[in-house]
Amino acid sequence: MRKPIIGVILNEQKTLTGNYIRGIYIDVNKVISESGCIAIGISTPQTNSFYNLDINSTPAITDAEFSDMKLLIDMCDGIICQGGDEYFDCDLKVIDYCYQQDIPLLGICLGMQTMSCLFNGEMVDIGRDNHKQNKDYVHEVYIDPKSLLFKILNESSILVNSYHKSHVIKTDLDISAFSDDGIIEAVEDKNKRFFLGTQWHPEKMVDYDENAKIILDYFFNICKEKTGKSAKTFDKFRQ
Image (cartoon, rainbow, N blue to C red):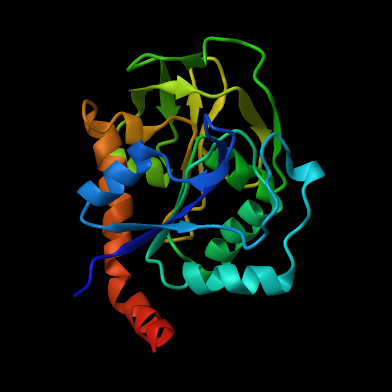
């Protein structure tokens, strides 16, 4: 049986030499590889650069363009929305497609915020520095005992890192965790196999934090259950 394929929604970057690229963060690629899976990038076919732009200043993706993206998504056993500095219409379309098709999806930081915004969410600047610190542990989060996140971890509170400049103040998704100062820290839909986003970065914690490893292992194991189904799609695509 082939290795599971994890699609990563690529984000916009600018190199030191001034070139615009779409890429995967090294930490995200590392946890995918170490889980026994293969990472592939999911990029919009749109060729213009989105660097330093936002959802209000970039074109919406067309149906034809998204049909091309779906060829890649349908090859995947799971999707990671890795976050970044801005989100775009194509990110919302990928997340919505995964939701409708019940494709396992993990949203990280801005990825979690984008998931929330798709479901009538609102995001604002955080207005404080205590949620953006380069430390192993920054604050505690408190987990809803009825949530999938609690089922995964069997913990009512955990310590997490924190790097974000914005936060979600409302969403129609289930809110599964808050920080100790009331910031929404995790969202999910319990009716899906895995549709969960964390405000923190478990991929950066996996080498020293057991809870981060448990979350990622759970996600990758769900993706591995889907391997047989998407293998048929992959084989059909190659023919």
